[in-house]
Image (cartoon, rainbow, N blue to C red; front, side):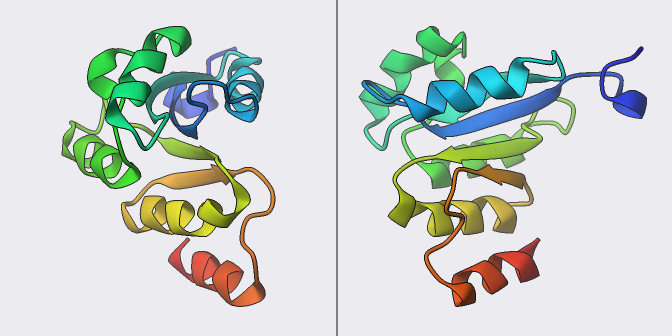
Length: 132
C-alpha cells in the first residue's frame, strides 16, 4: 500500500508549541507519525527563537526549519517550493493562543490540526470555518 494514496508520500507537518519543558507537543507528534503517514519537518517550538532552535534536534528537525514565530514559519514555508513546504500545522500551545495561530496558518494557506479547544467562543470558530 502506498503512503497516503495518490500523494505517495508522507504529509509534511509543522508543530507550533512543544518547546522546552512542554508535554503535549510531543504527544501530537507521536500520534501524527504513528501510522507512518506524516513526518515532522518544521516548527515554531517556542516564541523565543533561541529556544525554538535549541529544541529542533530533539524532534529531528533541521535548525533551519525551527522558527521563532508563527508568522516567520508561515512566510518561510510559503516561500519554499511546493514539494518541500509543510502540508499542515499542528497547534499545541496554551488554549488562549489557539485561535490566532490557527487563523494565521489558514490565512497562509495551510491546513490545521488543533489541540482542544479550537477557540474560546463561537464567533472565533465561525471565523476559522470561513477561512477553511
